[in-house]
Length: 170
Image (cartoon, rainbow, N blue to C red; front, side, top):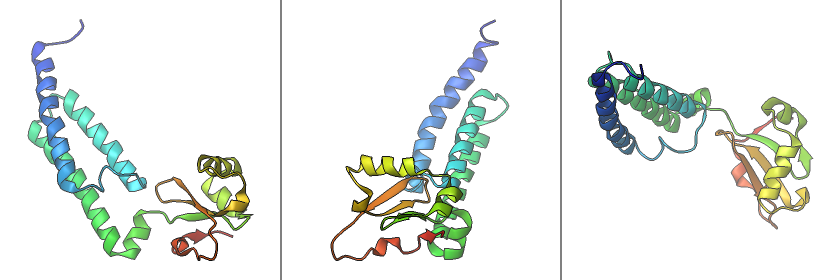
């Protein structure tokens, strides 16, 4: 048979209609940080969030209150972790990785490339995407905490203070 009972289908439909605006409301309350670019903790929360919503929709024994409480718990945990990360350098280093310097002033850092599993080809790709025709025009390439590569172009007579806190693996 295509489905067991009409009541099971109606339950999924009603739960979905209630959970969707509830999730949007909870995310709006938790702030802009929640749906932003992911670090590893944000990714784990997102996967758990999706799993929870899917389970909630198709498991008839989970009540609406249980599903909403579980979602609120995940959002609260995410808020607490980000709140603590902003206020405690130790905590931030515990839950988030440091940005890593991969290239600086003409030099690739081979140990950093191996550690982060980034290839020179990927660095050349980010240079091309930024309209760079030669690596001599690049001051630095950094693997950020969210897994994205950042490229810093060389500038005449300026120091690069944005590299503060970037891990140097030499």
